[in-house]
Length: 111
Image 1 (cartoon, rainbow, N blue to C red):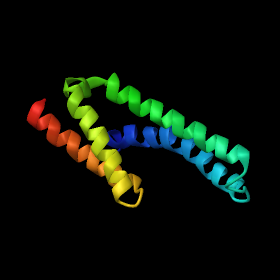
Image 2: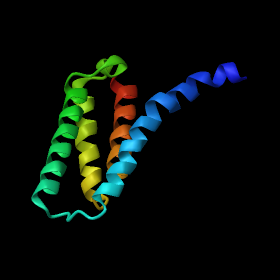
Image 3: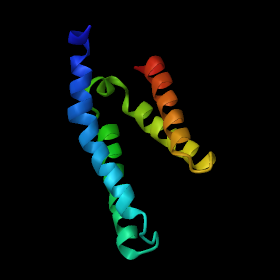
């Protein structure tokens, strides 16, 4: 049984823990920062721009199996997810859930 679990332990050790350390360090260091400070606003803007770029790349130049889903379905799922985000009190979870559902339904119908 331990031979079957070693990939998960390796993933935890190499993938999760190094990222989690930086996340917790960021939380500790950001505790006293003013959210309206120019540097904090700039960092948030850069992070949002990077996330937007990653999403655009995945939608426009999809990797793997997503490439078999028609572009119209991918763009429609993106639009529905954004609308869901706005309609459900700017909830990222709602936006992601709605976009994922639209993508799965669209892929099964048109893919």
